[in-house]
Amino acid sequence: MVPPTGDGGSPAPIDRPILEFLQTRLQATRQISRATVTDASGHLELHAVFAPSYYPTTVEEAQLTVRWYTNDDFKLHYREQYADHAWECRWDRHRNPHNTRDHFHLPPTAPTPGEDASWPDDHRDVVALVLDEIEDRIATLWS
Image (tube, rainbow, N blue to C red; front, top):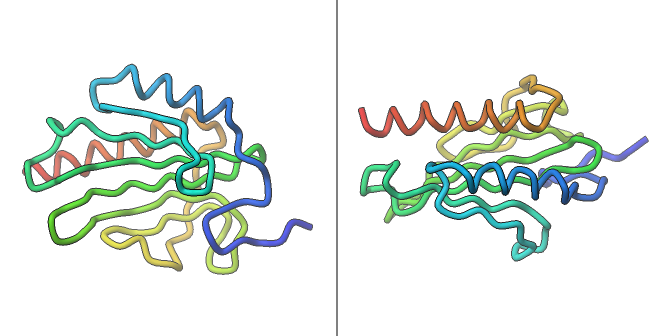
């Protein structure tokens, strides 16, 4: 039995080909100004920065960080940075002591524990769901 993790990680290795596939797809959109696969945080992950033109000027930067593991665990962390605070949420799939394997850490602070949820199996469907929810968030910011 694989032990649960409490840090949004997984006991499986990162799936680099999936991160590179997502990087290519995200770079092809106008919504993303930059997408890079990096290990700067000590974890191999995809880091995507949203185009500033999609956001009101009060948002200094918006980004999505993706970790996808070979066992289909994942962590997608969305964050908007403001001058005096951040707004963030996270979609997760991993064994842990605080929620079911699929769960969502609610905005504006992405606290743990999150809410139990159910995510699609395919990485493309998960990312499409997340991008749709981010689009809804952007529409809210402009209204």
